[in-house]
Amino acid sequence: MTSKSTSEWGFEPAITACDQCGWSYLVPASALPASSGSPMRCPHCFTGGLSPLEGNPEQLDQKLPRVSPPELLLPFHLQADKLAGQIQSFSKGIPFAPVDLNPQALASRLKRVYLPQWLVDVGVKAGWQMEAGFDYEVVSHQERYSDTGGGWTTREVKETRIRWEPRQGNLDRSYPNRTAPALETHDRLRGELGDYDLSASQPYRSEDAQEAFIRLPDRDQTNAWPEVIPVLQAAASRECQQAAGADHQRDFRWEPDYYSQNWTLLLRPVFTSYYMDDQNQPQPVLINGQTGQISGKRRASLKRAQRTALLVLAAAIFIFLFSVILLLGGIALPILVPVGGMGLLVALLVGLGAIVPPVQVWQFNRSNR
Image 1 (cartoon, rainbow, N blue to C red):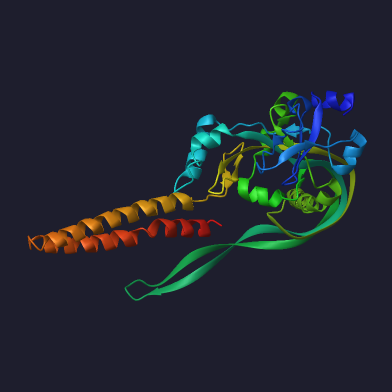
Image 2 (cartoon, rainbow, N blue to C red):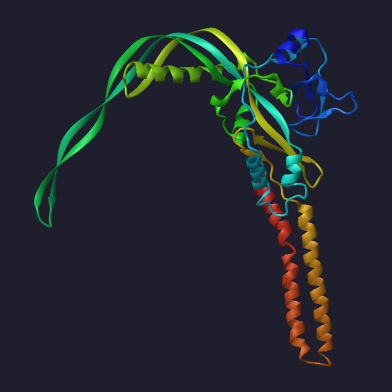
């Protein structure tokens, strides 16, 4: 990178990409390992290694939509006790959870990652038309007859109705910091992590970025712009309704002309961690760094269930053998015969119970697939 980019970021940035999941990150060059034989682990999939992308800044700009610093950043505001509680709740309720799925292990592996989101400042000039709705009250009277006495009675009824009138005009407005997705997986991640309170955003500080992995966009401005247009139209329709003093509006139409677009980035905080499953493969866990909403695959351990099933089966065999001994002793002491018979029944029931743990795990993993 050039010295200019170094001064903008506050440190010398290096662009890396995971050789497994394909996520690309910007990290401080000083954080890269000295040996290429021991790459940094990807904080998203935790299976691949991060390899630096080679080339000068102009070449890297062609590979990735954005490498310049963001305008705003949402800090990691999640309190430690709430974070621990969210991790605890994630691991609870899983039958025969993997041994590695515990709050201590997840907390010890936490990584800080910033996810990008586009921000665009844009001016709009437009002619618009709509139907403006105004509330008004209509007073009517209802007649009722009572069989229990009193005869006919009259009561006043007030009903709110809407009067629709055409309105039109011109609009010239500037809309700052309208959001647009910077990742192809934006909708999926939003479903997993929930929304963020963007009012808590702060100007970018280099010291925040030095302690985290910054996910780089894989969706450029041209691709993201169509999702900004409905947001702008909704904002314009609300403002035109307010300007008309209307209580409602419908059939809003406009012919916009967009100008002075300025794109930058907002960084959203995410904690990532993982636990090892039965196949000794990492299962990633994502945590919203602002609200604590947690997401990840919750998998029960079939190996633990099988070990439990073997212990139950061993207990059944022991009860069976002891019951057989009692039955053989019944030759000399007939009183032992019913006890031995009851033992055989218990052994059968305990043996059948051995299938419960594997079935329980299968059902849980199937329902959480």
